[in-house]
Image (cartoon, rainbow, N blue to C red):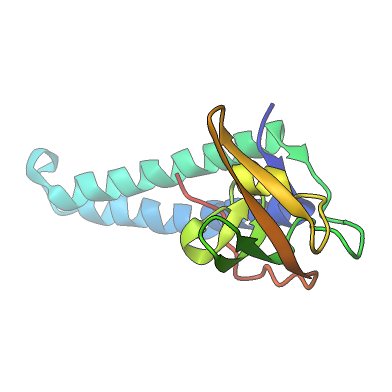
Length: 167
């Protein structure tokens, strides 16, 4: 089974592939040609760096195309009163007595530093489909877990700035 992607994720990936094929590839080929013209290739750092960049771009294209071929499409619709994909939620952590805000996203857009949590993460799995004021157990592993209370759900989806992770 491949990555779980929304239609929005798929569109972003297709746009990135197109950009890499039409713009980045052309620039990389030009950079290799220009560096090759500088002479001795065995000691030409610019040539080796340009080749490395070109290969990195081609590798990223293959990775994204493979991801699209094996993807499982998940829908980002949910009931008005329950946590769904691309919703921002405010969670109260009982054990630590603090509140945190997260946006629930697919795993390829997960970024804890930006507050994006994956539907594949322990918190994401636990809160998906739950409602405001639900007390939810988040199972981290066989011997540890904790409770959170869903305080607020924002259904507005502003994911234009969300980016697909680069590996």
